[in-house]
View 1 (cartoon, rainbow, N blue to C red):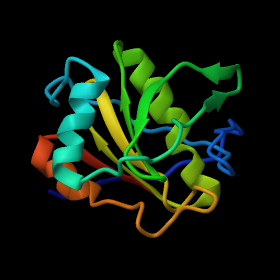
View 2: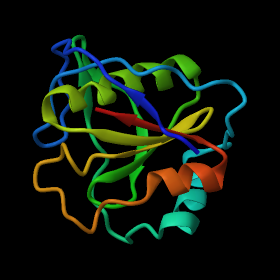
View 3: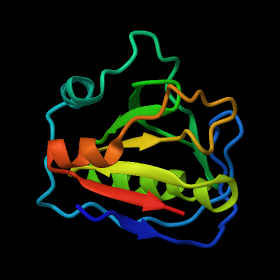
View 4: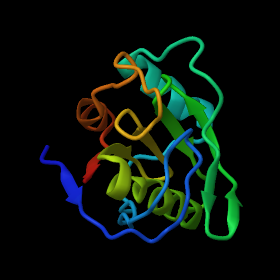
Length: 151
């Protein structure tokens, strides 16, 4: 599976990850990508593939120009997080906001499904640990999702 790479320009939208800020757009998930019925269902599927930590910390707080963005997520590691969405528009909005951090702070990798995604903040998270990163390309392939790399 060849990764899709996205390059973008900064938009000045902040993301509270500890030290993550700036933004660029990512494209939306095609309808044929796999979906899960709940956050816990997708987390369990991810955990089976990448062995999440028992205690990984609090979910990320996401902000855009308008303020706090409502998200439903669970940390897999200190820098890898599983997001779930009831509506495709919400997924697109959060993915766009988060992916933009790569422009100023490093690259980011996503495994993107129809109503969920897993993001690796290792290169942009302040104090991200080296044991926090996971193989998202392999995860995407195992779950039938799309692997996206933003630089």
